[in-house]
Image (cartoon, rainbow over all chains, first blue to last red; front, top):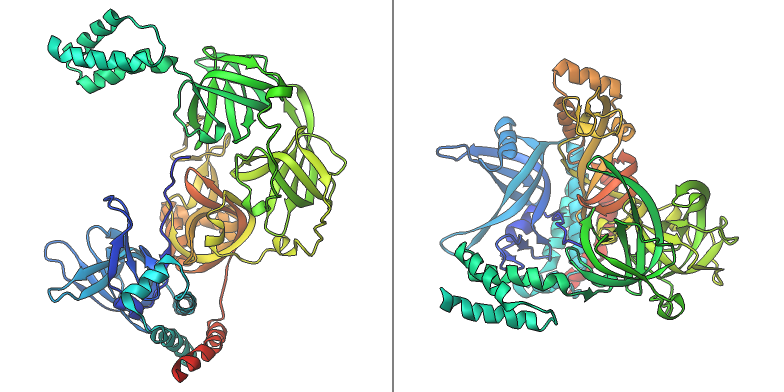
Length: 188
Length: 442
């Protein structure tokens, strides 16, 4: 049977863990093979799903529109960049007023600064305005997914092994992060 | 010119020499020179001559499992599992063709015979000069006037006869194309159906079998007293075919059916009959999943969702009241949603029909039509669906299939689910409490 294209899964990652990620790679040398970002708890992501609050937006483009948006979850900030190649997402950012809850499906991308620090950001495929309940559900789901990855970090799954080798993560930090995010829901 | 041709010609002749084909060197030289004169690159000229004189005469024996698609000129020995007559219209001319399934010890494959070779079900045949086409995503054997079909003695040459039967396979692991399936299941649904075949009307039995791993449909082409509801049966030598995208167990006269020694009780299959939601990564690697429940976030609404028009004759989706088969027609309004469901472990396309669409967006189709005509564009419904569903969590029940358009679940039921986030969060925190304390103690 002809080899079939399968869509990449969208991972649920908190901003803090996403910001800590810096290992970006491809599985093969083929120019069309997907780019992955490995996170400290061993999620190998090519696509992610975020529901968080838009706090700031700025058109940093010179000629054409190029939007930078800050989107905040209980653990930190995602940077979202959308320009002419993400027309639908850029249009949504241009139209919404902050603060607003947004559901974002996008691809992780990385940028290396001159001093070698790797910054992560998200290139959105689509963005939609959602309600507070949807945002809370995302926090619960993301906490669940994060805890599950932490529980499997000592398994022999290749992604977990690689994450441990590269990051030597102190997973209790991420466990605490997930827990705080959940507590945050209760206090609200 | 001549100097360049000589080594090339020798190469070609050497290649053809190994194939026992009588060749006329002069003709080949002549044709090679002519190709080169027409500025055909030498490699291409060589390939084309080899193909012309050699490939068409080399028979390649193939086992069904090795067939990938695109092969020409192969020889196959297989047993005919079933064969049906079909009348097709080729350039205005009615022609009978025969379609069916054949199997050898490595697998099953569907075939089309473009000529009447007097083939009957159960025949063991050696068929030469077949070619393989990809039809609806699966390779298919084709043979016709240029092929020869030879009947072999079933006693001595049945490719399936000495196939050793392994342990029974759980239903969840059934693969399309298996020709000697051995499995045990309990019959949870069964009904007779009358169909028309090549040899006139026939009664077949359709049903659903379940074990502790999955449910799967089955079709029996024979009547057997063990095929009654709630019986646990053990079947050997059944073949698994894809029917409407799902692996379906086919029982025919070559299949043995016994009442199973190990009986699957109603309790054993309870979880399968009343399924709990499964994570997508558990099912998306299967060939298909029958009647499963999944939950995930709606992360994208695909084009073609919302208010659409269908051809009244064939139900195809049409635009501008023009059906690509039936021409200008008066389209029938319909609602549907095509969307991407993602639960963080896997992803699939979901399709909701008109009833389910009306249920999840809480619109009647009449209201949808009114809204669309007020806004003067049907796409307003697509936007409405996006604003209602994107980012929400949906639970769906239905059949998952793997087809040309990727992995799809056609929903038989769908609902948006509300999670009590506070309770969920508390439960999770409690579950975590212990490991965190432990970590801090260290």
